[in-house]
Length: 150
Image (tube, rainbow, N blue to C red; front, side):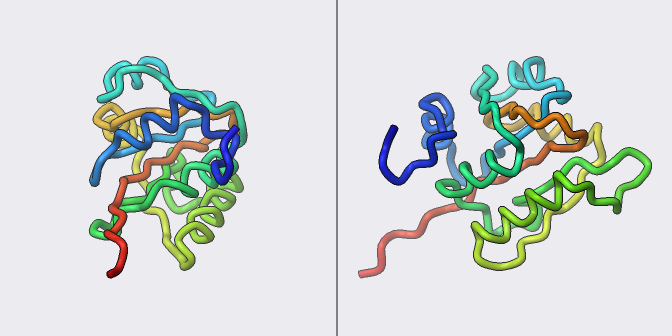
């Protein structure tokens, strides 16, 4: 345990988040996502796990992880097959955590299922959550932390 760091963030996840650079993608996936096979194709090459609901994992990650403000796809969700505009409860919960972390509305873009798989394969890493609800899959592009003001 460390002061000021959400206890859901285990050592492997902290190491990956710290190693990532500006523009790298992080995938946070539900239990049905093919996380292991996709993770093997990522930069990290291995699966990370946090066995908690998706919104709790996103809250923990975004407590340390800046979103990329230079692009419009820094926060994305897997869209429901055949219903791209429908937002299920798990995605609404995650949206609230994104907005809270950023201190303003930061809408997620939607990504078609197979396009999401392709983005995930090119990501830095995949964190599989304990989320059992469908469509609890998200992509987050890492931003920058500016130098301290002088």
